Length: 221
Length: 219
Image 1 (cartoon, rainbow over the protein chains, first blue to last red):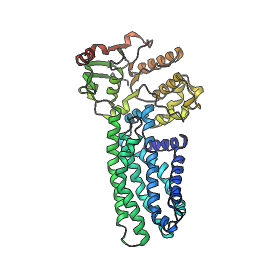
Image 2: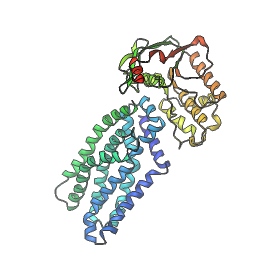
Image 3: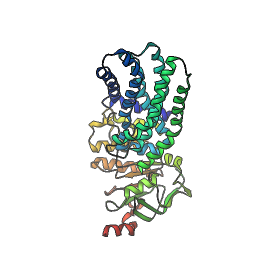
Image 4: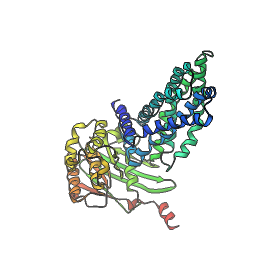
């Protein structure tokens, strides 16, 4: 188990030292969201209406930006060969890297989301539901993204292909992420959509290790 | 490591895509021996080492240690094989020590770091970030990392690339030390490793090149 956390810690250190790609993801997130008030205009009701959707879409795109670093650098410098031969199974290595990606990408986005909510005139009741839905939904973004990153690792300039592969798979997470904020804010409709969001995260947690490890093995072959 | 072990491949055939790289390959080495893999460029030296490490699957044949077939036995491989490929697997952002320490702790062998860095003559580079190393220094750092592994069998792919004369003799000493302890080494190389001929077996991959491969070349 200590290997699992060592790999995770190393990936976190790398993401903060590699020209600090984590802080760039956060900056991208802020800029994308702040474009909307400029584009849509300062009509407060409209902004409040689209706030949750805009923040979720921006989080999804920011997450996508940082996916290629999960395996790309390790593949290029040969570390992935060593990971495939180390005592910890490749399935667990993949999960440890997905966890590192979530901690370095999604957690900063979740922390930043309330401030962008203010910018988007988000209603006061919606702040906590937004944070809950992101906490429950973003692990699925990192996990599914890990599968995509492992499929495109051996392809040079696989970034665009990665987006095409992954974005359609993000659609359910986006839909239920946004709906769950709305239902929790209004207070009716129960928390069914939140439960479905949680189910999506658990489902991707169950398939990611096998799918991503298998495609990493294929990339190394 | 006190007892004698053998490590062998029987009737091994490997293909990349449609092309058969080599077929019907056999070798056998005992504790304390070096298997030197030679052959022209493209004859499959790296492919053979990766196949032994389990990174590439063979289409036929098996690899075994004593009588135990290791081809699918990942736990055995991770404990008993130490693979070093063309790429050094060093992170540019970290220092030499941090790089070696990461893998040594994964292999559960932190106390060997200092000694192995001394063996490769890179103690003075301990706190230098890898991005400032020359290619020879980086190769030495990668070799020092491999020396931290407790594995009995070393798989080195062109370990001498970039090394100067001093580096080569340090590597040669480390290999002799490993073999004296009963370890085995499988090494793809083109240079003279200055290791006693009686301890060395040579495997020329040109002898196993596939007839199919030749046909495609002619065509």
